[in-house]
Amino acid sequence: MSGLLTESKLRWGALLAVTALVVVAAGIYAVAAYQRFEESRTAASSVGVTGSQPLPAGSFILFRNTASGQGYGNAATVPLSSPGGSRAVSGQECDRVYGTPEKVVCLKTNRGLVTAFEAAVLDRNWQQQRVWPVPGIPSRTRISPDGSMIATTVFVSGHSYAAAGFSTATEISFQDGTAGNLEDFALMVNGERLLATDRNIWGVTFAPGQSDVFYATAASSGRIWLVRGSLSAKTLTAIHDHVECPSISPDGTRIAYKKNDGGALTAHWNVAVLDLATGQETVLSEKRSVDDQIEWLDNQNLLYGLADETIEGDSNIWKLGSVPGSQPSLFIAHAWSPSVVR
Image 1 (cartoon, rainbow, N blue to C red):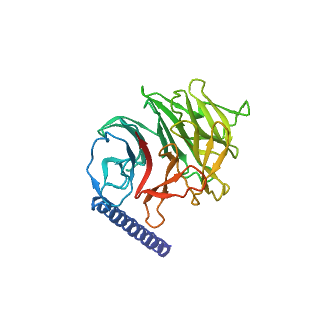
Image 2: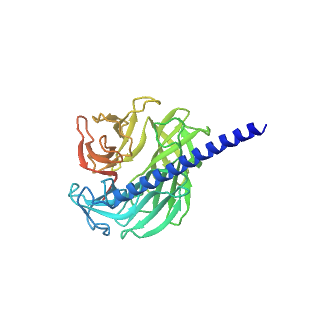
Image 3: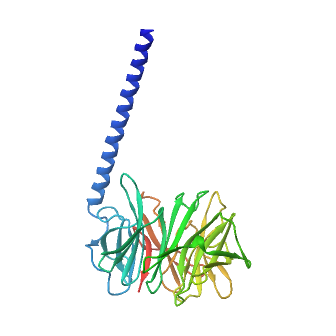
C-alpha cells in the first residue's frame, strides 16, 4: 500500500513540476511579447509624423493611425487638402474615432487584469471632457452635425458582423450625459410593430439638418433593414432591405452602405448607394469585401477602411466614387476609421 502511495505522490509531484514549468514559460512569453509590443510602439514611426497638436483650424481628416512605431493606434489628423502628407498624431489611443471641428469621440479598449471598454469625448486640444463605460468591443461611432448627440455601437458578444450569433448594443448619448438604447425603440416593419426579442441595431448615421432623424441597421430573424429613426417618437421604421452600416451623404439625399452578397456563413460586403427619394440602389465596383461604416468625402466620393493584406495589424483608407464604374484608389496609407471634418 505504501508503495502505491509513494508512486501516486511521485506522479503528482511530476505533474506539479510540469505545470509550474508551463506557467513560468507562459509568463516569460507574455513578458517578452509585451516588451516587443512596447519596443514597436516606441520605435520611430514608419510614416512622417508631427507631435500632438490641437485639431486643425481648416478642413481635415481624423483617423486612427496604424503605421508601425510611435503613435500606433492613436487618433491622428491630416489636412483635407493633403491626405498623403505628414500626420499629426495625438497621445490618445482609440479603436474608433469620429469628430467635429470642436470635439472628438474616441471608443477605446482599456487592457489590464480586467479588460474594459469606454467612450470618451475630447475637446479640440485632446483633453478629456466626458467619459462613460460601454458594454463591449468598440465597433461604430458617429456624432450629429451639431455635436449634440453621439452614437456608439459595440459587440456585446462576438467580434464581427460575419460571425454567427453576434449581438450588439447601440446607444445615442446626449450632452447632459443621458443615453437612449435603440433596442428600446419600437421597430416598425410594413406598418406593424415587430415584437421579436432577437434583434440587433447598429451603425447609426445622423441626418443633416434634421435633429430628430437618424438612420441605422436593424436585424431580426435573419432579415436586415435600413431603418429611419425618430428620437421624439422612439421609433425605427424599416424603409429598405439588406442595408448594413449606413452613412448619409452631406446633402442628405443618399445612403452609402455595405451589402452582403455572400450569405450568412461566408459574408462578402459590396459597397452600395441608395437614393432616398427614388429608392434606386447602385452597387459599386469595389471587388473586395468592405466591413466598415463608409464615410462620405464629399457628395460624390466615399472613404472606407480595409485591412492591409501584407502587414498584420495594419489597414488603409480607400477612396471610391459613388457612380457606377468608379475604381478604388488609396487615400491614406496606414490608417483606419476615417472622419471628414469641415
